[in-house]
Image (cartoon, rainbow, N blue to C red; front, top):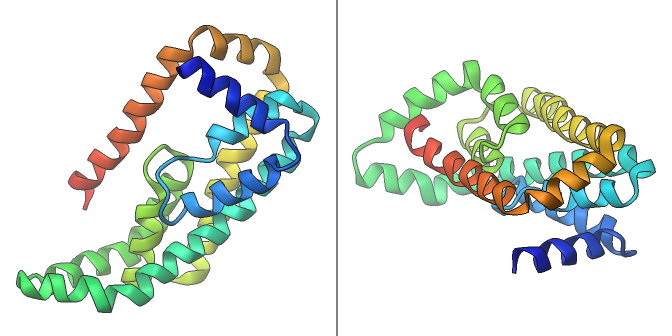
Length: 193
């Protein structure tokens, strides 16, 4: 089954709709969707290595625009949803304390989440809820997401065929590792926040 999914993703990566799908997944992943755009980016670059720069740019721009959606979800839905829940538990002050710390150091958190498998959407929403400076948020998001997607794309461009062979030989192991990192990122959220 995993092999069929891999083959389907590789075939999707070569269709005329691949760039739209990549942009959509990159956008929505930054605010609500749990699956990272690498699922499409990797096979797209492997399938057309000369377009690595274009694909990285699509991922970066779409991801930062999606991050702005996450930021605004946090900024505008916090009062309607989050604040009443904290008030119910008598924890209004706890949020203010965390927000103060986050607004001083949150740019580093956004950078960390933008580059690593940590769920980026959590910090995009939290950044809006705490009122992290929007310029800081956007600049750090561009740097972090750009670094991540351009590095991945360049590595695939540079070392494409051996990486493709490696992925195809170790598909089960890589899928397991991906799932561990994905779930681990969500588990880490419980301990960080």
